[in-house]
Image (cartoon, rainbow, N blue to C red):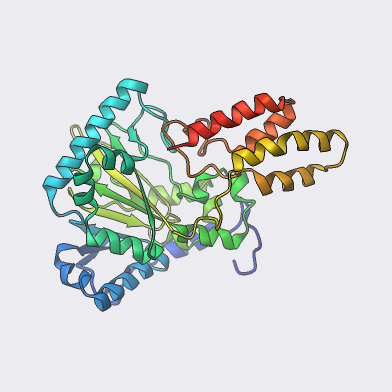
Length: 388
């Protein structure tokens, strides 16, 4: 794949993916792992307490974790990452109250990879937990193991977000996918990003899940295709039928126990399994942790900029002073062209993987000939939906 400036839907042969995912992780290369099951290293976090408390050893452990996530199998399991199960139970009770309240208010929310209402989902669970029970939030996140794995992949100053997912018996499996950032874009959008950005996307986010109950494999624990994060065009290729067949044939699952945390590279081919149990309500807190570097240097009021720019764009376009390419460039310099971060409670990804952007609204307004006043009202409404 060297030298490929851009990927398309057909880039990369399935034989390459087969070869990559046929690798076996050598336990001898791991210093701190308790065991390796199905190519996933398992770490006993309480047993690593002294290691995590020593600066030199902690850094060595983080280097091992980063190597697994980047060039190893792409996933690791932290046993008893939250070791005080009474804290897990306390947080679960908060989540259950939030689920009941939100289901009563709006009947269930939209999801990225499942039909609306199929699961119970809490968007922005981190903020909601913190505001509902600050002590529980502190005790829950006061885990040196959780902190270390986030820093291992993202470095310091990372940003924690979380979404809770409750899947009942009979809940369907997810289709194979990659995750945020490029995994949340359609194939046409993903193909517009240069090849090196496909590689960098995975370094900006860490995916994790904390188990809030014992989860046998039959309850639908996350299916993983080890080493698949190494397939460079995978953000496009995971949609191909032959890739989906490979995933279905070779994906692995591990049981999780209350307090365990599974972390994986967001470029790993994965998807939640079907809940085939009669009585396990699979409740997981899905951590999506972001690099501090995913932010611009300055804070701009892009809503005000769009309001000021819109009449000027109308006038310039009417006088033939802007080509379509020039118009797109001017909009890109002012409007927010990305859907995230947003408030997924009020700005859900209806009709796709990501909500509408400022830029998309501006283009649509120009196409429909909206007055500046009507555009400004729609822009304000969008800003309110995106606000925390």
